[in-house]
Length: 549
Image 1 (cartoon, one colour):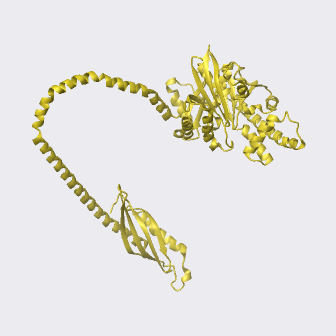
Image 2 (image 1 turned 135 degrees about the vertical axis):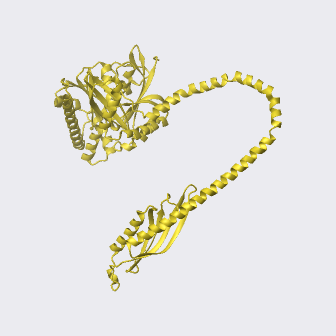
Image 3 (image 1 turned 90 degrees about the vertical axis):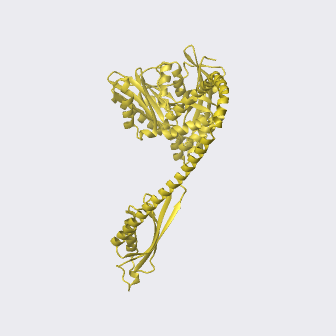
């Protein structure tokens, strides 16, 4: 066993890997490795968290861990800012983050990594995740016994793996995942990062659309075909189906190739004159048959599969067959593990601030408990001394107690007078409320009368006050019944009744009441149009609680 170890859990759209690393002789040692597919409909992103929870339970991993978040939940961007002193850098980057993140900054968890700084400009890798999603992510991890110490962004980790493996600079690392493909242009002094919204799921969707199958059926067919088609002699039916698979694969390759050209063009526009000359392929989607050959011809570059395990020692307890099959999935894991041996490794942390504070407090709790115990023990000698003093003074206390009945009687009298004073104060407060209520009644009636006169041809038949209380606050409602005259209606022609005009009249009346400072709202509006000339109505006015009656 090595001197120290680190658990890294890589949570991707379709699978989870858990790897434990140690360091020996300045190099990484893979001590344990597990991989499990996620079981859910990959087209329904909302089901990912529950699938992750179930999978982690099956994998039986727990304890403190660095967790790699999938690209589908991240927003990443490379920005430039003027070179500033370290004391002002956070302030400037926070200002730029607020401009470049398309959500309110209070609704996201974000972090940054300085890519390069030439003394004139600083190049910054900026990444963020919705805060609500980060909270849910952490809740799922903690529910299965995983304590996240850091949430790392998968977008940047292939750079660390490239650097650890000592590969060729001015190259492109293309990590083809399920929902997204991460593209990095790596160089000795930094990187250029971009997420391409095309991956293995795009191929599944294209196959499903072409064959008229659901997403999950198309995913199963895709895996079987591209795993077995080279070893099986195809019938005419299978050959016909193969046309769908090959046409869909070609379409997805073309989309990735086009996005790759655009990304490299954007990279050139940043002023970095060295054009990439090689592509390193990684990620499960990169194993698509013919993909490497297509990119080599389309991009006019050498294409090579990235082996992130090249400089990693592997413990004999690790399942070698599983590890070999999962080599394309190890880029992000090795990239995070390299932080154990590379001082200049890049990375971010997207754990919400409140969770960091909770973890910091939890780590201090044992020390606080020990301090409390020591503090309690330190009080024992003084306690013994004080106890002896108290024993010596017990006689004096008894003598003093004999003299206190008169004082106790006065205290009880004062307490009785205090209760009486409180009762009188409550009555005074009630009278003040009554006086205020009376004033409000008068002003309310004046206000109602004025509004009825403004509306014209309206009179009230009944007004009733309904008081209610929830134990904390008193509410007041006025139930009104009345009639209004519809002058436009010909009394000799009942068919001339105009519903719209009646509604307009009653709405004007209600709106007039609602503008009153005494009225908060109205409800339970009912009308009786049985007499086309006289419209009967009744409704409830909700009195403003600040104007009690």
